[in-house]
Image (cartoon, rainbow, N blue to C red; front, top):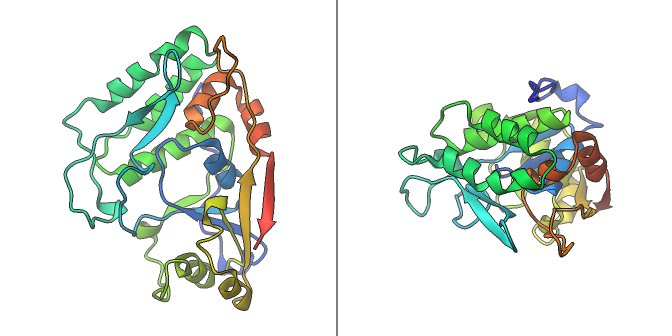
Length: 258
């Protein structure tokens, strides 16, 4: 059954942060397992929502198995908006019955996925709170997933923190300045950001920059071919694996210092 989150309060006192880890990511919709692994292995997770929304990213969609071969998208419909809108201002188009559509897309898992009912209960829980904010929806989804997996969810939404930080002079300084403002001395990021960050800035500021590289763990997906479809939403992993098995998967990672 879906259980309420067991997380600790977000944002510990500054004096307690020096030996703790913080991660900052844009709010993804039911993201890939590596994203959840980053939550599991850090002490504070910030959903960064004050930058420009990029179409065709992972904020309003993700991938699951198709009934036969390949993969397909599950999507949250969005209201029309300007090209320069910030993530925090992106609104869901609730005139569409997208919740039932997504749940219908998951129904093909019923015949082959041992955790189908438990997983769809988590998805329903994420949809329970009525909201037109894509950020709030994604926060709810991450919270529901972490509660089900028994992973503490110490998270905050950046635009709601009102954190006074020094304005960045380059994109890779957002995380740096948030660390300086909050007292964290170890910043973790997904490996996709390796070329994005100037590590020397972090070294000069006394902040350890670490890239969290999840080690992919194939698992049976109920297909006769035995082919493993990688890079799918955490929903797929939850369909075929118990919470304990997923936690073990998430513990397989490499931490690379910059």
